[in-house]
Length: 522
Image (cartoon, rainbow, N blue to C red):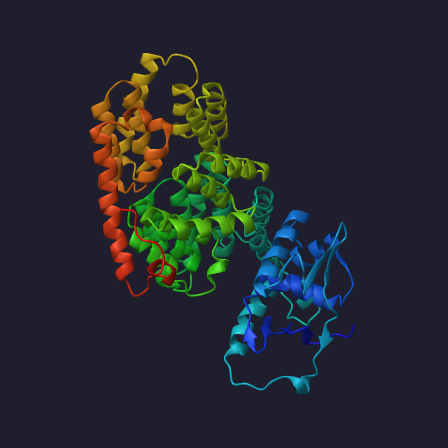
């Protein structure tokens, strides 16, 4: 069909140049990959577009599968208000691909409405973003020549944003190639740092990868101290090494240098959350300067903040949505079954956990959850197997190894236990992560030191632990849950959370869904 800038699809107006979809003059939230998918279908008229063609045109050079396309079609339909059972705009052609529900009709230039808007400026930003990832329907337009180095970096960024282990490796290979050509290229240094750190944070590698990432980020900052990207990469490397204060300092520096750096702002928010600063964390995640949907893992973080603050229904809705719509989101695959577990909805947690595993999410957290569910069922053999798997996935982490021994089926060696407790006690004073105190509590409980175990839990609360629901639900803490000291710990969490919750509800930025939602259970 002849090329045009604007098309009508039933009651929709689709502007390819401005990347805008309207119904009766009202813009719809169709952006990013969803818009590129719709544009690809529009450009093919009313013919069926196969999976291979869609993947090549919309996602290339990234390598994705048919499930990724299917999930993106679901998001597009949701944005358009389409019903998959009776589709109007995008219909499924079984075993072949997708097709528009009607032939798109080109709109003549003289039919375009004349309005005074700020859209051209916004559209320019969208076009630049789309060009950076090689969108098929823009690729035919004339562009200024770009350097080979620029093209390498753009492709690396695209792969790095995909959120999958293989694509992270592709991104790193490209960043390393760029550094061979230009060793002091700050963008290449920061990108290589982030992808190496992701090996540790996301893909089960040991701390050596994060240490290498830290060196790259420090070099980037030394080359350009005014680079927000360099400081953000430094924050991520420190984050993956467990340095909460250092990571927060770097992330906050990135935001000061570039207030539009929503990714760094959201990363800082996660660490505020770990410190027990729940109101600060939610405020930062609500204070997005750009499109919040572009901030990786933000939806999961907001859901977690809602959960910890006691807005359970709002948290559940967010968790469920991102779990259903983002099957390749590592943290959504962990967070949804974990939420169900903490709510003592153990059967549902098991179903969600099985689905997360089918998606290829190999994480020690999921193995641990499977072990805890097995303990809840009284199946110590299955628990031992699951905890052993967690240890194999993260051999450099101490908690999976501790659980594998404490619930391995064999009597715990007293010498090992004493050494482990001594090691944990020596490490805790310099460890800013409150969760490390939970491991110490489990070790001390195994050594029949209930007083010490409860003191470790109390210390975790002082350092920012705010998940009383998990402590109450987990069979790992069942032996001490009847102790008045354990109740005092969970009550202390409830009081601190109640204060944070009131701060959120009184704030001008409080999300409307929280003010009109459920009452606090506290």
